[in-house]
Image 1 (cartoon, rainbow, N blue to C red):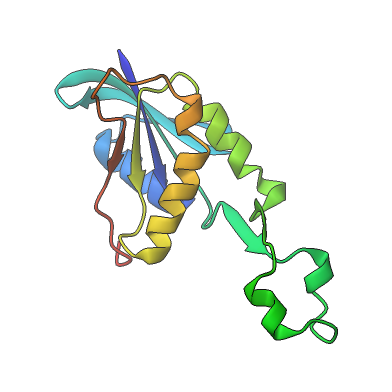
Image 2: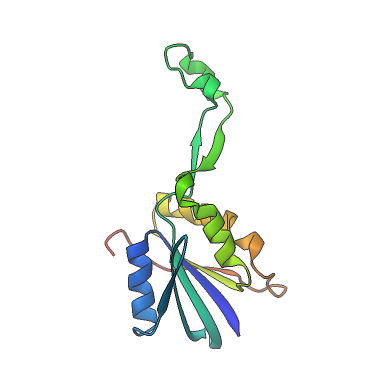
Length: 152
């Protein structure tokens, strides 16, 4: 049976999607963030679903400490200054949560807003899941995108 990891932009959306897709038959467990699980079908094949979420952006970007004192930094130097990426909310351990949940999964379905910010979060989620998933069959699709609008 294939395992499908689904990731939403926020916990309340993950719970709603899981409730709807599982016809109310999902069970939840805590794993950094809630994970809702149920059995069903995906692309016509039996599947085990894991639905979880992030809490907005997974990563943040900033300048190194050397460039953070605005009184001593020439604004023009920021155009060529290096940047540092880090976990947006380190206490939540979202990166570790995504990596843990991705282990043993075959497919990833992203339920994030269809705007620029949602697109960016999709790539952040993929960076912390795809490497930990099973490898797809040659030519097989591994990542899917649900259509979600900010109105949902």
